[in-house]
Structures are given as C-alpha cells and as structure tokens.
Image (tube, rainbow, N blue to C red; front, side, top):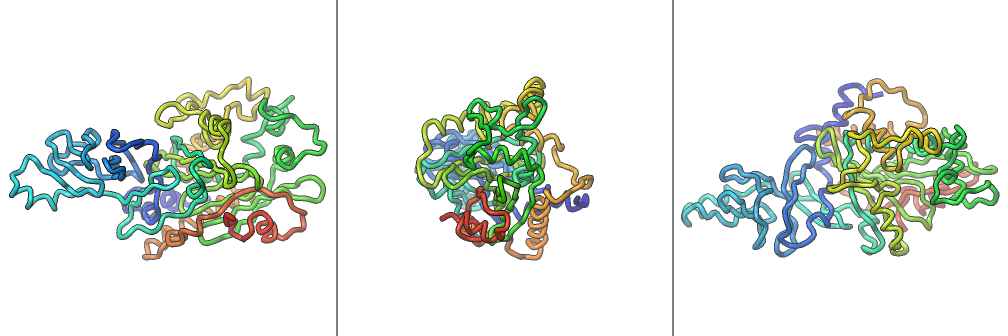
Amino acid sequence: MLSSEDNARLTRTGPDTPMGNVFRAYWMPALLSSELPEPDCPPKRVRLLGEDFVAFRDTRGRVGIVEPVCPHRGANLFFGRVADCGIRCSYHGWKFDHRGNCLEMPTLTPEAEERVRPRAAIRALEARESGDVIWAYMGDGPAPELPRFEFAEVPPEHRFVSKKLQQCNWAQACEGGLDTAHFSYLHAGIRDGERVGLHEVSPQRPRSDGENEPPSMARFRWLIEDGRPQFTVLEHDAGLLLCASREADGDQLYWRMTQFLMPNHSLAPGNFPDENNLGNTWVPIDDESCWIFCYCWNPDRPLTEKETERLSRGWGVFPEMEADYVPVRRRENDYLVDRTLQRESSFTGIRGISEQDQAIADSQGLIADRTRELLGQTDLGVVKFRNMVLAAASGVGEGKTPKGADCPDAYLVRSGDIVAPADTEILDVVESRFGTMSGVAL
C-alpha cells in the first residue's frame, strides 16, 4: 500500500506538483495527427496535465499548441479563424503564429502595435509529429529529443494508431496495463461455470482439444491453468521489463514480458515474434481522467485491411468507440455489462479486452485509494512502477533529470512472449526473446 501522501504525489500532475514536474520533463502525446487533418483545418481544444490549450495546423502544415486566451480581452482562441499561417481571434482580429508570436493587432495604430506586440506573445508548446501522433513538450528550457518508439519508425502502413478516453486517474489505468496477472481472470471465458481460455468461447478462434497446440493457441489455456504468475522485474535505461512466468506444458514456462517506459508508456505482452505488437500511453487530461493512446504495429509487414478494420471497430487495446474517441461502453452505462453473458461465456460479462480493463480501472474510483490495498507477489510490477515514478518525483525536485528523458534510444524496445525450459535463467530468457536484456527492437 501507499501512504495518503505518496498516493497524492503519484496521482497529481497539475502545474507545480512533483509528478506534474516529472511529466513535464518528457514529450507527451497531445493529439492524433488525424485530428488536425489538413492545413487551416478547424482548431482543436487540448487539455493536458490540467492545463488548457488550443491546437491548430497552419497553412504550411505546421502544428501550433498555444494557450487559448487572447491577451487583448481574454477571448478563447478555439473560436478563432485558422488561415494565412496563423490563428486569428474572432473578437478583434489579433493574430498569432504556431510559436505564439503575435503577428497582427488591427485594433491598434501601427505605432502602438510596434510597441505592444512583443508583450502580446502567448505561451506555445514545442510540438512535433511522429508516428501519426502530435507530441507536445510542456517543460521549461530546450526540449529533449523525441523518444524512439518502434511504432513511430516503421512505415505508416505497418501501424494503426488511435486513442480512447479513460474516466479515472492516469496511474491506476497505467497499473492495469502492468498487472498482467489479471489476464487469468478478467479476460477469461466461462463454460459450464468454469473459467476457460478465450479460444474456447470466442467465435473468432478455433477450439482446441489440447493436442499438438501451437504456443499461440496453448497460451490461452496456460493463462487459465496458472493464475499465479511469478514476477521478475528488470530495470533498464528507460524503465522496467516486467517478466511474468506461468507453468506451461511439460517442464516449460510461458513468459509474458511487459515494458514500462517512463513516465507513462507500456508495451503489452501477448505476442510471439511473428505477431503484431501493441502499446499504450496514459496521458493525464487532469487528475480524474486521461487519454490512452493506443498503438498496433508490425515491424516486418504492413497490417492487412482485415486487421486495420478490426482494430478500428474495437479489438485488443482498442475499444469500440463513438465520436470523439469516447468508448461505447463506459462509466455512465455500466460498460453495458451483460449478466447472461457473464453466466454463460464471459468472466466479466463485459465485451472487449479494452472495455474490461477500463471498467475495472474506473471501478476503483476517479482516484484510487492505495492506502487500503493488500498486495502480494503478483503485484511486484505495480510496486516497482510506483517506486520508480515516485523516485523520479523526488529527483526532479532536487534538479535531477528523470530516467529516460535524455535517452531517446532507450525507448526502442519490445515486449512479448516466449516459452522456455523452466531452468533457464531470466537473462537468458530475455536474450533469447529479444536479443538484449532490455528487450531492444532488432
């Protein structure tokens, strides 16, 4: 458990908070590139870490993320006109560029404009595009290099990127992605009152009698047969590699290895080397909600039309969504829980892996109370995550650069699964799957 003081430090990310200062040392996903689809398109409201901005794409295609308040009379620039390489306030026509510089002040005389213009500049975040995502840097001073995520470095046709609204604090949603022990229960199927693997109840997967199963199929059975995985956590330059082993067939272990990358990224397990990769970034909107940016990519081939269509409809970490990236199943409608489904084929009665994760994270409250927890060995990854980010909060307060902020190459890593003999040393397991201890992308 955490003290109430540490729980507040972990979850509060607004201006001048310890964790907020950690987040502001890194690049944050702010928007999908597709939300500003073309030059001079309508602007978008953006709320990050409890602060409000307006984003626009100017005539030359450059993205600006600026404070929304016009310094003239306080009108909101969201209602402004984007044209001629800037955004113009609809109230009196003052115009600003993507870096926040005031370009025109038509209500002033030329002499007064020349004198006042330098004081009319508005705050603008450093903004860059990579991997179909618009990234923002909210810190002071020069921005570091963008982290090198593999999904952003593959050709565009190799990836699918989206986002979803989560109606709770960023940290508990992130912890849900790191707590892979829950796969044995939250994402299980039900048949005749007993837990079974998803392959036993999903119409999209063939049933298996357990004979000559490939690992890609047997893993669903192993998740059910061993609901108490053993965790080993390894630290590297960008974060943590969380290694969870379950008993497999014979004298073997099934390893699911998750990446946590500072301060709020995760690469999910559940993939063998020839399968697609999945990842998330949990970006605080404020202390009681967050955007989860979702990535699917294949380093070796383009995603098929069938795959992208399935992802867009909702699959894996991607939920079924309404307009504006709001999940169909959410807090207001109890995630459309179906008690008949829960009795007959689904452990939760909630359709969708993403939706099941969302429901449980939200159910802990807008901000989880970690002072009441009873933790065990399967919570080791969550404990290590908390220790790392809380240490970063203390370090930033002492003027230290947090882990990974100045190591962009350290983010070029992978997560994934492997089956290995039970007596294999953990470092050998990791090297066999990834090639290096940190799971570097090859």
